[in-house]
Image 1 (tube, rainbow, N blue to C red):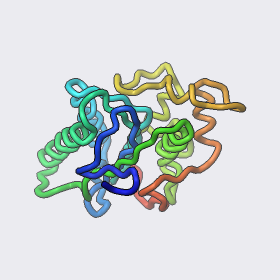
Image 2: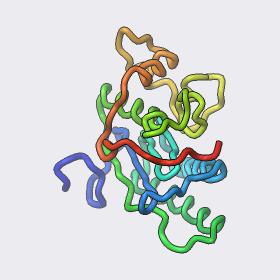
Image 3: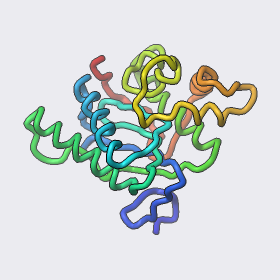
Image 4: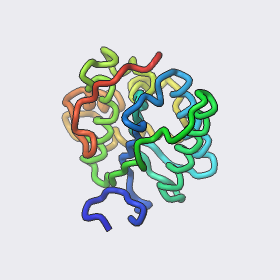
Length: 207
């Protein structure tokens, strides 16, 4: 077993924890470069969720990778991620006539099991579009391929797997326990996360 909490093929799955999952395109290539790509990735998660339920607290789809903060309900994480990534890969191959793998390697996953950790990692995920070398948007709520706009505006419909109630309950003073305050928390400081400490220099997706 690995000495840290990084998910490996032999590592036991902890059904009570959330995991920060990162999936990258092979050689950091843009495999989520259009609006249709982003929608297809979301459809993959929604399709798998029907048979293998899970809860997400945050997600952000970038052009060459994506981040999610996820807790499976019953099925192991590697089962869920395998199905999602395979469904997207098959769709990508059909749409672009692509042959060969599209992912850099097996997904990275780090267990997150503390109040502070969940807030920091979710903020890190949500800040991805503005923490690139050239920010993709001026305001985070303008980035459509992230759960941040769904926290910013609770009137927007959200995927059934997204829980918008939990993170705000973790906030401590001076922040109030509201999603508006959670968004303010995200904007208050830049976060770092394991496996992704560098600043990305990538293109913005098509909106």
